[in-house]
Length: 237
Image (cartoon, rainbow, N blue to C red):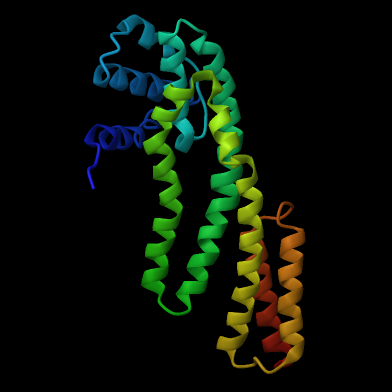
């Protein structure tokens, strides 16, 4: 397999673009930095004074940054309106990224790791890091090319992969895994023959599915574990 070292270096640079995050321009310094680096790499020959103007306010989800960078270059080179679409996509990707990566993907990665931790804690940690960062690095790796190719129509690519539904899919998956975790806790605790506890587990699964978009699933896991522990200690079930 041939790796594109230029893209890999670009991804590594993007990991540091929040290094000067501040309350004045948020991620603006990093955004200008990425524009400057890619301008050199691709020999776009955009004047430095134009790039330096982009040090003003900018804020988006860090994992979707490169899409905005790609859109900016495409619009500038096509003599479009890079500033308008920079604002549009930074806001849109900020909301989409938070919904998927923080609300849905991180809890899903967590419950997968919890299930595997019952059998091999080290492997659970490794899989957690791999599963979460697969999406993280994929979007950083492909973001610029997609944004540059689609330009102001980049949202079409996200619509093609149904990205706005990914959060719901992962919420459902996480709720299902929550039920499995409760069953594993029961089994490991040695009171798996009590049908009431299995009924409770199924109830947690249904509740988790219904409330997936209302309550952070990690808190649901913690509450479920505490209730099972209380039942075991208080009633010996």
